Length: 93
Image 1 (cartoon, rainbow, N blue to C red):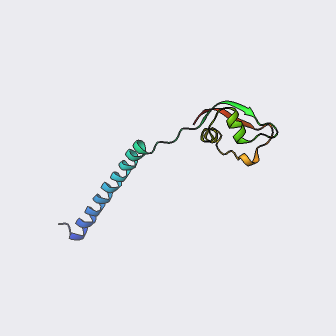
Image 2: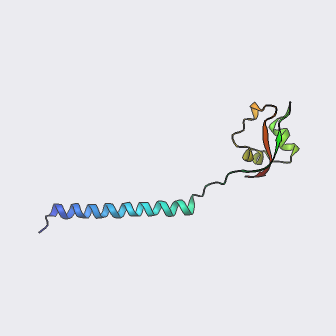
Image 3: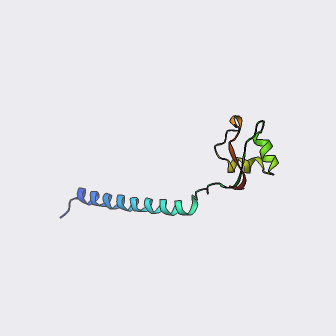
């Protein structure tokens, strides 16, 4: 006959297994249904930076909002533009 200790140990193991399965299933369902990765910005047209250009002037010249310009040019540092640098001026975020 099983002792009380072994019954509790077996019960604890079964509960731990059920908890692990539940957590794993929850992550898969939660991740697939609620956490959708952002799509990467798509660039459709570029222009080269000329002397004296600024981000705002380029965005305005191509009819882009500041938000869209920033989205299609991720990691762009507008304070460090250089002549010949390629910037995206048409696309989707």
